[in-house]
Structures are given as structure tokens and as C-alpha cells.
Length: 327
Image 1 (cartoon, rainbow, N blue to C red):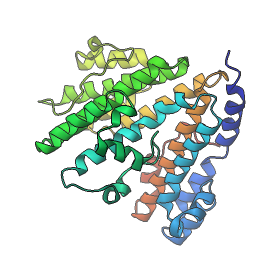
Image 2: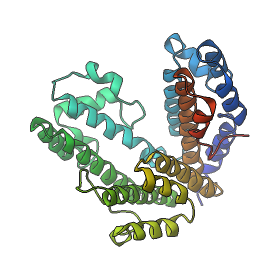
Image 3: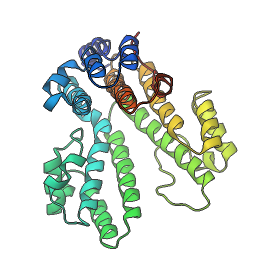
Image 4: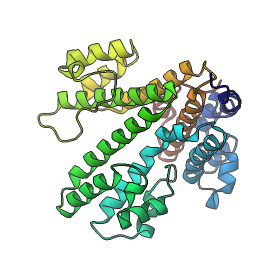
């Protein structure tokens, strides 16, 4: 029994109660665009980040909440390495940016605004390794994948670059899960892979030709046979998460748009982490806290952008995610 997680789990549970509340959401939704909305923003948990941002930039403040949450979890987690499954996607995103930038021979300074600071590695350090062809020092397989992506860039096959990095992300996640001693981390990675495979299968079922890769990722609990047809996909989803994706699947089937399905994926991960967080001897509470911070950030971003672009309250409210909003 890993009692080392008790302190960190208790702390993030308390901090989670300070995130975006329903009252905050209602206040932001009725605020007029501009100064009134900015004032309402200052009344939320984001206020300290806003005051530190250059010219009180709201987008920068939202991003800083995510970076701050990452840094906090790395400090208080008994095993910070186990949480790499949350950050590594940002490193892979940065490598994707660097590879595509080689088409125009852009230096790091020219792409700095496009990279994320939420990865395991400092972006400039990562860029240095990519430039020096020493990515293998960071993670197995990274240099080989990066070289493959660069070959596609040089050949003008930019549409193939994303598939290389998507495959790299899942290979790295599987490697992290394989070496982790935390059952929840293994469950989290398997679930992320399952949900990717479901989305990929739905896309395949609606496309005349395959335009993306990978179309199936190993490492989940749902095998290839679960995705042979639309019926088998629906059956697999019902077995995996009874009733959870029914409405979103209907919307996707009718419109071909994945926004509702993407929102339900985020909700499902939060719900799964919330269930598992009853065990105070695992990383589940820490993962839940970060997912809640992400959800709060997404909600604030949705409201601020919507209000400032003239969207009505009802339309914005329909896009707000409430899987774990404080009352």
C-alpha cells in the first residue's frame, strides 16, 4: 500500500474545490464583452495568473494555470515520473512543430509561439536535441521517428508527418505504462488508447478512403475485432462505457462532426479518474486534479472567446463541459 500518496491526494482534493464554480460560469456568461467580461474573469480562480500575465492577457493566464498545475503535481507527487503520461503529448506536439518548421528552415525563435511548455522537456532543450540528432538520449525511438518525419517533410509529404508522431505518442505511452507500478496509470493509458481506436474506427467507417494513420493502436483492452463494423463499434462502446457515448455517437453518425464525441471523451476520462480517486494510495487523485484544471481552462476559454465574438449565452452554454464543475 503506497501511503505516500495520501498527502498529495488530500492536497489536490482541496485545491480542486478552488477551481471554476457554476457561479463563476454564470457570471462570465452574462458579462458583456470587453471590460465587464475581463472584470468577471478577475473574480475567478484565474485572478492571480491574470495579474502576472503581460497586459493581463486572458489566453496567457489560462495557459499558465495548466503549466502551474503541472509544476505543482511534479513537486508533490511521490513519483513524478508516473505522471509523464499526462505531459508527453506536448513534447510530441513540439517535435511535430520542429519537424514541419524544417521545411522553411525556421529557427527555434520563429516557432517558439507554437510550442507548449507543458511537456516533460524544456522546449528549447528538446529543439536542441532534435537539431543535433540526439533525441535518443531522451526517449527510445524518438530519433528514429523524428528522422522519418523529416524525410516526409523533405519529400513534401506533410500529410504523413502527423501519422508518424501519433504513432510515436502511443508507443511512448505504452512504454511508460509498461514500466509503471501504478495500476491506475496502466488503466489510464489503456483507456486513452481505447478511445483513440474508437474514434479512428468511426472515421474509417465514414471515409471512402483511408487518409490518416495509425488506424489502430495496440495496448488497449478493445481488440481489432471490436471495430469491424459500425455495429461492432457501438457494441464495444456499450460494453466499455454503457450509455456514456450514446448521444455523442448519434450526433456523429448524423453530422460527421466529432466535437460532441471529443467532449464526451474528456468527460469519460474525468469520470474514470474520479471513480479511481476513492483509492488514496494511487495517482488517480492527481490525474483527476489535472484533468479538472484542463476542463476549467477549456470552459473559461470557450466562454471568453464566445462572448467576445458575439455568441449568445445559450449557444456558449451548450459548449461548456460540466463533468466536474464545482457547485
